[in-house]
Image (cartoon, rainbow, N blue to C red):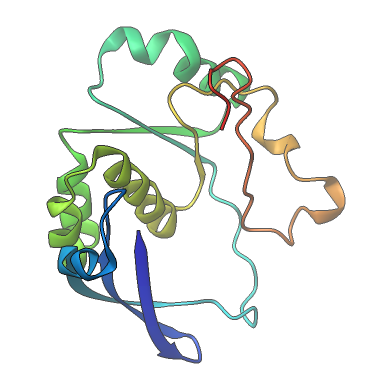
Length: 172
């Protein structure tokens, strides 16, 4: 996925999102672009850091009761009491993007690759809402509050974690 941006200072505009299946040549890839415009403000460090939102986000095909009360999704709530847990589903993700990002909703709804659509959704959610995104098959090994060393708390508003997939084959 390519997101081209233009702008200066702290204002940026996303202009196009393009994708190309493996084996496509560049001239055909250009035909698979969907254009939309969305202006956003990038914080340049001159504003004080906002508290890190205490929200945990996950996405799943549906929102059945057993999935909310068992397994990894349930563990996120147990390990992180006091954090708000949000799950977005395949049936409501288009509506979320349309209501929160109306100017680029068409790009999102036209994505045919479910993996790309899921990735795009998580970026949009974290851009708008903040918090932590956890894949549905990931179990928390420690509370989120312990992810950032004490000396950096209050000065960090982005954490990128590595998912350990050692139990899956092949490892890539």
